[in-house]
Amino acid sequence: MTKRMMKYKMLYVMLLPAIVFLFVFNYIPMYGASIAFKDFWITKGILGSPWVGFDHFEQLFKTDKFWQVFRNTIEINLLRLVFGFPAPIFLAILLNEVRLKWFKRSIQTIVYLPHFISWVTISGIIFSLLSNEGLVNKVITAFGGDSVNFLTSNGMFRPLLVLSGIWKEIGWGTIIFLAALSGVNPDLYEAATVDGANRFKQIVHITLPSLLPIISILLILNFGSMMTGGFDQVFNLYNTMVYESGDVIDTYVYRIGLTQGKYSMATAIGLFLNVINFVLLIVVNSASKKMSGQGIY
Amino acid sequence: MNILFLVFMVLITLYPFWHVLVGSIMPYEESIRSTLHLFPRRISFEAYEFVFSKDTIMRSLLVSLFVTVAGTLYQLFVTAITAYPLIKHDLPGRSAIFLFIIFTMFFGGGLIPYYLLIKNLGLVNSLAVMIIPAAISTYNMIVLKTFFQNIPIELEESAKMDGAGYMKIFFRIILPLSVPALATIALFIAVGQWNNWYTPMLFLNDKEIWPLAMVLRDILINNNMELTRGGSFVSEEFMLGDTIKNAVVIVSVVPIIVVYPFIQKHFVKGVMIGSIKS
Image (cartoon, rainbow over all chains, first blue to last red):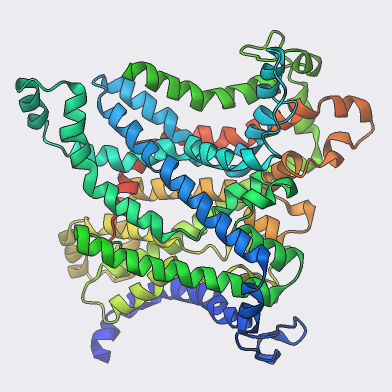
């Protein structure tokens, strides 16, 4: 055994940096999450702080604010699922219908681009379009309408999240569907044409069914990240006026943990969320394996 | 119909960028008066002159460049050197090590314990925090691993006959043959580093070492008037406000648009490999 391992010692040396870094920056914080069960004092450190069991969790579950962000997270993710999830499928089907190669490729190049721009920059662009003195309101008032508070109204914030999310990721989302479609046998379409099926019928009977396996996997995976709020997007777009509709667990943890210094409480929320996500992932993955034979591990 | 809709999609995608670009090169007086500006009537680069004359922004550009280059080389190196041993199926303990790495993709300690760790390590307010903790991206590691697996094993075996060790094989054979994959991953990492505002927001209180993304955030979101108002030409700089914001947005986007064509060629393959893991 050891002799065999000696033969590979260089390979272990190569693996060493990753193991050390992951241990320090990923596994030590996992241990650090124990402060969710402690009355953490920064001066006493993690080891020196006394255990309090599930006190923080009990307190948490009694807080209205917590249930509000919990609900927000789920509701926002459901909205993303209903409107955001089908969008790239729709676009991929349309792109798939384009026969001109150069045209298809140039459209793809353009719609992929926003994926690489950070939410900080995009929120800057959004502010310049939607703020009270922004382009959209200038146009509305020019036509005699009243300007709309896109960025500070609770009714507008969720549509803003969903639409800006679609705008940023729709192109990127098409990649996987287009790849699945490139594997479809072109004879199928030809045969359908011979049988007199028009373009629309071909989409319904050939294109959509060939996307079904990948759609179901991605759909299930989406449920697996139900408790993740998209920190980047929400944090860069929200403000105190829209906490009611837009504050999600991730942003709540940041605020009460790092700006209010309630370390143990914030860790308890983080841990709660992480465990739910992890359980969801395992459940969802085994469901996916059962239904489609494919999973992520 | 279909074509029309797709052209509409393209316009929707591009117009916001165009709006900001035009907004950045138009004289301020005009930007208040006009509503929908498709083309600037007069071009003025005063906002850019202002941006590039500002120490805060120039320094942050240098920080961003440094962090992007150093961070990319470092993360690429660690990711590649980790991916290679994992393709050896007969390596004792391989699957345990792989699980140890992959597990971090699905479970973490959360924000606060991470924050406390970084604090205890003394990495707060040092540029190292932007580079060192992000040693390896598991996703990229899987993509590289899949790529390495497809390199013909015979090449390695003949090198082994000549007495080359794994280290030598890795540096002399595997890496040179993987340049396209490495370049793609490098660009992905570089874009991530360039866009990183989260780490500096958490750990860099010292504005002197802020990268551009953080300065941009400060100007755009916190609406920090210190920058647009400060200095001796108070009123004039204040007047430039919106055009300056637009100019900073453009400055932050341009490097990505410049490297974009190089990533674009390859990323579809990368995404496909990464999306379904074995």
